[in-house]
Each structure stands twice: as structure tokens, then as C-alpha cells.
Amino acid sequence: EDKVVQSPLSLVVHEGDTVTLNCSYEVTNFRSLLWYKQEKKAPTFLFMLTSSGIEKKSGRLSSILDKKELSSILNITATQTGDSAIYLCAVEGYNTDKLIFGTGTRLQVFP
Amino acid sequence: DADVTQTPRNRITKTGKRIMLECSQTKGHDRMYWYRQDPGLGLRLIYYSFDVKDINKGEISDGYSVSRQAQAKFSLSLESAIPNQTALYFCATSDPGQQETQYFGPGTRLLVL
Image (cartoon, rainbow over all chains, first blue to last red; front, side, top):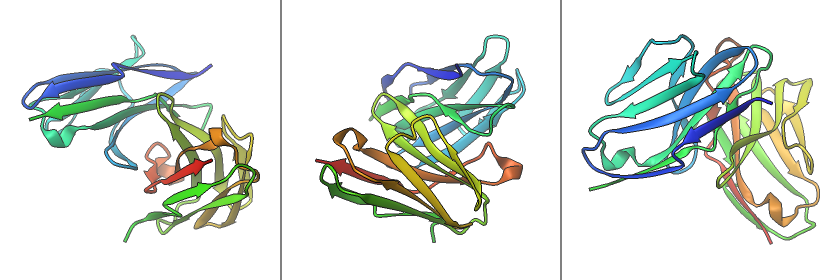
């Protein structure tokens, strides 16, 4: 059965800290892994990863995929209160056109 | 203007009532999805549709039905609502050429008493 597991489930840090969020997956014929940020309501797209070892960056956020370990990490450096959100990881396999989501990591950044 | 809209945004209903959640999109995407989100369970797929004539069950379709009235409209119905259907419901769309990137509506918070 395809599944996505994220850790930690919850994280509380102070502004300026660096955080690493983890996502591991089991999916038949892996195609891509995606990260979303969910603040108040709807998730918004952050990154799509398809190849191992290639880092995607957007400002203070970066992510990398390790196909050997069936995992991905999302790094946020110099965190700000605006980074407080739920971060969702999702994967897709070639055998399916659906995304499988993890439970998310809730990040709280305090001043 | 929002590309994906959902109505209503909040709804309180009673057990046994029929309720419909509506989703409209202006992105011109063929693919539309309904998810529910529960604390600790993440997003789970209820139904999805790849075009007007195509309807597919997701992982938790029991107790739900859908209708794809047009390319731009995809509605979700609870024929007889029950309390464990209390959740946050999201509609999403995607382009077949960019299936991995889904665009989400703002969500509908449903409370079944």
C-alpha cells in the first residue's frame, strides 16, 4: 500500500532557528514528490522533486530528494513567524494519477 | 479573483441531512478533486474526475457522491450526513500536463451535529 509519513508531527522553534522537516514514502513506480505549505486554509505549492540529489531552493526554503532512502527533507533557514504553517508532503507514482499526502508537520515559529 | 472557489465556506448541519458542497474553477483544468482533511490524518482523496464524463472513487468515497456538471464545476454531496463527516473539505484542480501541481480552493468547514 502506498503511503507517506512525515516527521516530526509538530515543531516549535524561535525566530532565526533552522528547521528540517522529513518525509518518507512508499509508492509503486515513484514519479514525483511535492511539498505544500498550508497556512490558514488551502495548501499552496512549494516544490516538486523528481530527481535524487538535486536541491530546489526558494528563498530561505530548500528541499532535496533521496530516492535511495525513499525520503525528502525540507529545510527552512532563519525562520520567521510567517513560516508558521502545516507543511504537507505528497507523492505520486506512475501507476496512478493521484497524490498521496502525508499527515503534515505543524511548524510554529515564535518571536 | 480566486481561480478555485468553494461554496459554502462554512456549514453546520444535522445528522441525516443531505448537503452539497460546490466547487468552481476558472483555470480551464480538466482534472478536479475532492479531499477531506482531518487532524492527524492529512488530506485524503474522496473522488476525482479527469473530465466531464469521468468520475473515480478515491480512498474514502463511502457516504459521498459527486457530480461533474461541467468542466468548471464539480460538486460533492453527502446524502445523509453523519458526525464523523465533520471535516475540512478541499476541492482542487490540475492540468494533465502538470498533474503534480494541484491548485486548491479555500476549503469548506463542515460540522455535522
